[in-house]
Image 1 (spheres, rainbow, N blue to C red):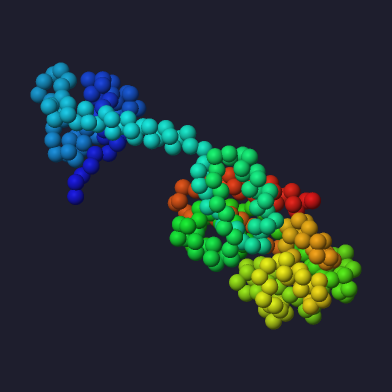
Image 2: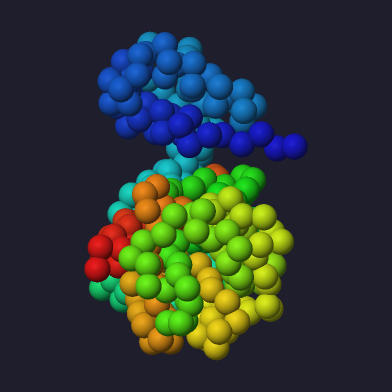
Length: 302
């Protein structure tokens, strides 16, 4: 395999060519003279040739050294241009593929997308709404840059920024025995016919875990969306648990349901944004997380 010189070696060599002095070149490169001299020798070893004529007292290059200096200058210039372009790059410029689960997307995305567009006009945001497992698979495969999920959820190889807490609310038709209560305890759910989303939706698992329910206590009627679930509840088939962001966004009100919060500590789910470790998307994920946090806080305190 061909051994290639490093940019650091070329940088030191061109500094030497420019200054005609090992000591002055070392000062320019902010390294010791011995460090610079070692780098030049490493470059000569890598190229298998002598670059500096060491037979004279005055500084001189060998013919090969002059040729290498001529060819190295544009290579280093292109590398420096690349570094400057990367340093000037703002987060969230160009394409960004973001996945969001269905129990978050309709309540956060309209506001978040609008704010991201205003803050990052060069952003091309591509959104995908899907179940958690599907989004996790696409993130791992590199088809998504980041995902907004409810946690806890195991995402090997990913990093996560916590966005905030999303408490559960009790929701039922006006005639339900618990509909008139101002607030509930988790124990009040005992013997309640509780309807939740079908298996595959993490909201179902988080609600069961947060409220310490037995899976047999929660009926799965095959509802694939919160809107369908609220329609089932409105028809008197049972009660349900809704995330606060859905309640505060008017989902229960528009379907005629009565809602009540739980007493502290209320059962809840955690919202977060995840990206692949080592993908270079941390800065962009942090920027999206800041907008998500602001939006979630506004919704929860409304």
